[in-house]
Length: 163
Image (cartoon, rainbow, N blue to C red; front, side, top):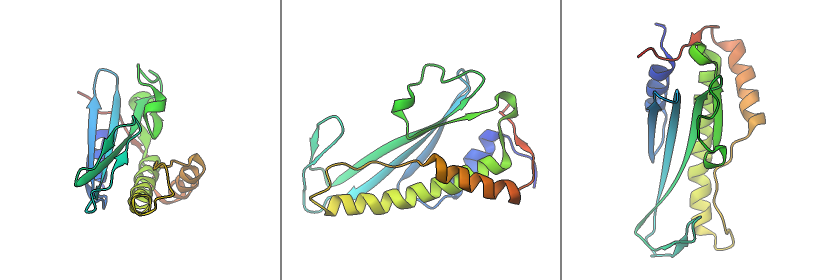
């Protein structure tokens, strides 16, 4: 396997994930950060009114739910980002980036989150008793996946890209 930098790894890895919504990667060179945006869609055939987190009601035929993950340079800090605006904030080690195992664990866990999120959104939409829908990130689950990946993948870095 040819060595990839973190940007190329994320682009290829995100493209390979199975997701019916939209997933995008934004790279902010100035702050040395990446934002992974996830958008889930659900068809609203019955014209149900849904209230979003800002209290805005919608009965559109397609309802969208979005969340994001921040990947940032741990040596620079959050660079003006607010951690509360993200599902998760994951640091990389400056120019050293992530280990391959960390990257593989991230993609594995992201697929789980998207699968669970899709299932939970359908359940939320069908159940009048649920009042809120949120994606959930578990540091414990991610750590478990990382531990498994560390024993499986070669130990090399996905360096921060040179530009």
